[in-house]
Length: 178
Ligand code: 2AM
Image (tube, rainbow, N blue to C red; front, side, top):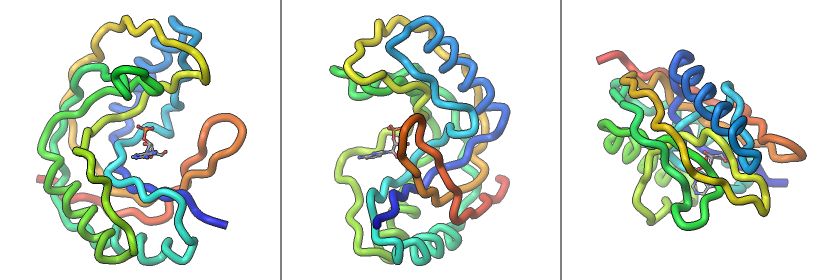
């Protein structure tokens, strides 16, 4: 058995509520979309994939050792990924996330036999998923602009099954205020 693991930045509840409303409105207007529930909204910093469960402890230690001030972020535009053949509706995030991302990746590389994704980091929050075989019609208002601070970094285990994935938090570190 393997564990599907990823590390994400936790978002403030008020931001999650606004983003969930946007995702649910988009899904209500387009049957091709399935909104992500409010409690599952997050910003992925590192996707570890299917790992030996023995990796959970060192990955948790790596996350608990992160030291950073909370990055100040802003919601950007709605962003379909992948752009040519979208499977998710996301909102892009802007702000000083690169140092925290680099620190998380560096700590995970040092703790595990894992290689970071070579593709550029595109910070986003997934708001809705495209149903299998469906084509979204893509016309959307832009999300409301908002600035906020990321609150914590969390190691999650993702449980896939029928219906939406369930994300189980395994280790968490709070980020200090500026
Ligand atoms: P997504 O929201 O853009 O699909 C749990 O599945 C989290 O890990 C989601 O945030 C998901 O991103 C991300 N994820 C899943 N597969 C991934 C991959 N191959 N590379 C990077 N992130 C991935």
